[in-house]
Length: 198
Image 1 (cartoon, rainbow, N blue to C red):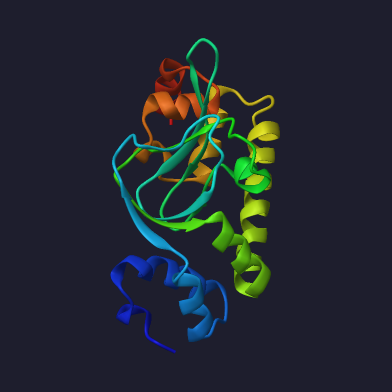
Image 2: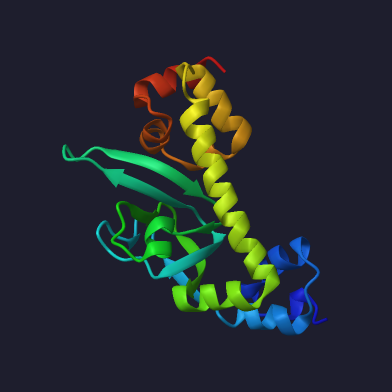
């Protein structure tokens, strides 16, 4: 098999991710990597807008993406954050091809690998390793949503902060207080007080 470090640098994180997870031969690895295109995005750039049909999935080489909604009063609620080595998209819209009910935004300058919906599902249908990746994306999304919904019931602010530190240790170092607070369902001042008690 071709050594990973001989691949173009942009593909090395995804190749490493695939090789660590699966026994994958060079031909299949190259087939998967060829479906991804490099994308560099600026801090705060919107990748998917509300009411836009999502046609792209992203693997994060570097940076951070977040999914968020905006209510009628203009208040943002962060729903999900993805960091290096993770996949991210507006998944319901990506699957059912209906307008997204959320935004996907780069909150840091980010280097991404993008794959079209057509190529994504072609790989799911033809490559067992990518089929497993899709199943894992769905499982992680479901489990995280359940933990966030039910784990927060009865949690006070300090318990929420401890939960997010345990599940994503770098979260509070990478995400602004305002975004982190909206994700945790507390005010920025409450988050600051809770962090001071750790």
